[in-house]
Image 1 (spheres, rainbow, N blue to C red):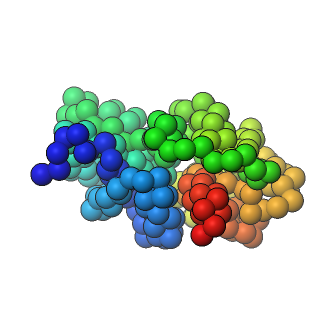
Image 2 (image 1 turned 30 degrees about the vertical axis):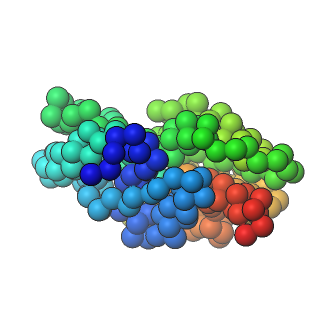
Length: 246
């Protein structure tokens, strides 16, 4: 019922199981960020993505879940409203694993990463005055491989909001989806974390400036580095609130 010329003001937030069930505050903060940009967020009903089933090799189960989710997202795609997801591994699953297992039945829907949406959406938002704020973005390894330009996009986005954001070159954090949660893999997971993430985190004196987009990576940092890093969208929300004196 929304007129076509008004649909560009809406943003459809695609839920993922990890953030929605274990870090709902992040989802809420993303909705607040969208609102602070003068846009209208719509939290879509939760639809299982199927990524965990794919990781464990339950491909028949994954195919059914993927088809159900694809049908739902294709139905929304025709509205022409941007759809955005917060977790890189889950968003990229819609592109890669869905295309592989569904073929032409996947359809043409597109779910954007937060940075992919923001890099376009900031054109509608006034720049904030430059500040001395500085952040360091730590990449999800799947994200780095599939979207190597992501760090530059976050840097551009943060500059628009008056802050600097640099990225660091990293390997896998060691969580690797469900791998690091399994007791038998604990020592390997810890050693992987120690290879690149741990020394890189130790170089950052102010841990509140560490930004991590992947849920599994944030979980690993919380477990072994003993602090909870922010997602980049949460830092952006804080920048806007501070600029407005909120």
